[in-house]
Image (cartoon, rainbow, N blue to C red; front, side, top):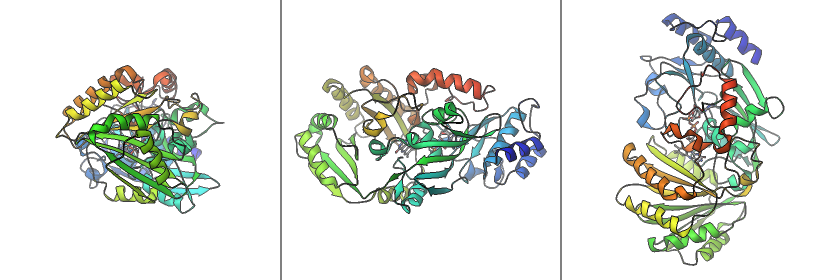
Length: 458
Ligand SMILES: Cc1cc2nc3c(=O)[nH]c(=O)nc-3n(C[C@H](O)[C@H](O)[C@H](O)COP(=O)(O)OP(=O)(O)OC[C@H]3O[C@@H](n4cnc5c(N)ncnc54)[C@H](O)[C@@H]3O)c2cc1C
């Protein structure tokens, strides 16, 4: 495969930056299209308007010079070679769920990986195309009684989520998505198709496990360790707003076993909610333990034996394109009452407008991974805060998210790279002590900055 990619790229005169010209002619673009087994969309082509869109309509105005629907790693290598030849940038597009539109650009050829969506399973390991989405992955693996740890939104791409980390209901049991990644097929800026694993290219594997999208190359295939999936319970409990602080204390103090995942949420309509999943166990005992830790009865609570797959199916079925605006804070330890009160004030200030603050755990299996083993920097931390607004004007939303950051500034140590915010000059906040290592690797592997974007470390 790798040799074929090189030969094809060389045949088109596409390798390296040496033969760079100022701009590609229409006949150059046609030659690229003819060399690909997928489809190249240029502005004006039928299909371009659909192909260039991301999940969030906020980025529809961004019109890349081409969207290359790649069907193979060789296609990806050909596009990279073409970009090198003509001095163009490249950005990968997986599920298209980037919160900042990082998978499109007016200056970069978009390598659309959605055709690379195969999923297979052998001996505890899944082999997954770099453009597959979570719901089809879960469905294919469920047929084998297994799953991978990943997120709860079925239309998110494995490409972005695995590169940046990957939180979901199995993270306390089986780790983050990136923790389960054992190897990748990676097309790097030099056009090579590399087979990356812990033995052959450990530094590249490190970067592909938590370093975020758009840094060291385009992943065309993942190998990911699976865990046995069991029947799953779920619970939801609501408390009145006046109990918010008690609920926060109880949720923070309650030490649940690894098979339990729960999130604490405060919404601007004064909703206080804890929602959770229990993999391979009944949800009721866990809900009871939580209620006892809170010390106040919920005003409403429900328990279901509903499989995770059903939950994800339901959400994916209803998924429409929407504007999601998000911010995050990483907490090394539980928030003090005083800081939690400030968080509640920030939420209450949004009354009448949509906003949710969600606390998700960073404990369990994901906290026990060797901090040097992956580029995900937040091992051993306690929880993450998400500041989330759906379908609101961006300026207004980010102003509120800024208030949230301020409220917890004394206790926050960073942010989550899959929840990027537009202030790219603060990129170091997403990487902590791993920033320099990732930057040095990027300078070596992509010296011409083929994957240039405001969100690529430099
Ligand atoms: C509605 C919604 C729900 C979400 N739920 C969760 C959740 O439960 N848990 C969680 O951890 N995160 C969640 N996220 C965040 C999500 O993990 C990130 O937005 C992620 O980057 C999306 O990946 P994608 O492939 O869909 O996006 P894209 O926009 O396609 O890509 C995101 C970034 O990754 C790069 N990229 C994508 N694929 C590849 C590839 N194969 N090779 C190289 N680079 C690639 C892109 O260039 C871009 O920089 C959610 C986001 C949304 C919008």
